[in-house]
Image 1 (tube, rainbow, N blue to C red):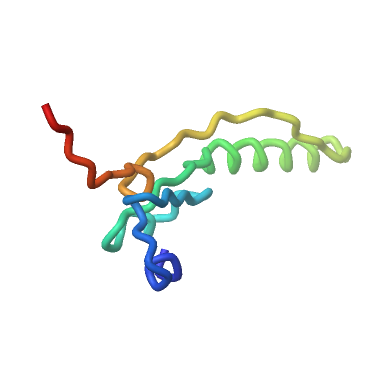
Image 2 (cartoon, rainbow, N blue to C red):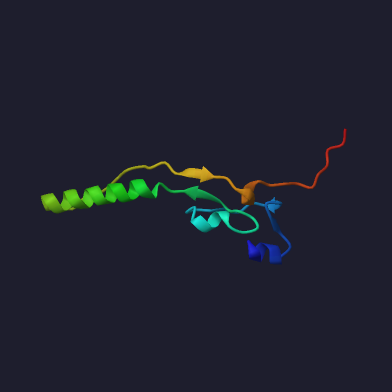
Amino acid sequence: MEAAEKHGRRVGRGLAVMGIDNLETSNIGRVSLTSIDQPFDKIIELATTSLITSAEHGKPCTIRRKLKPSLVVRDSTRLKTDVIALS
């Protein structure tokens, strides 16, 4: 986002930027970063359960699950325009 601003682009005003991991730092800064929130708790739970089951049965495991992420919309994609509507 800093590089864009150094080149005259304003994030949230004509340029949308998005992250993919929703780190705690995504909400810090002058322009908060829209991000995809991955269900890490569920990923850890599935991996741990599968690892324990694999160890107990002496067989390798494969996890094939689709988990639904969520979108956390913040200022970096709430595009604002400087257009004034005239009546």
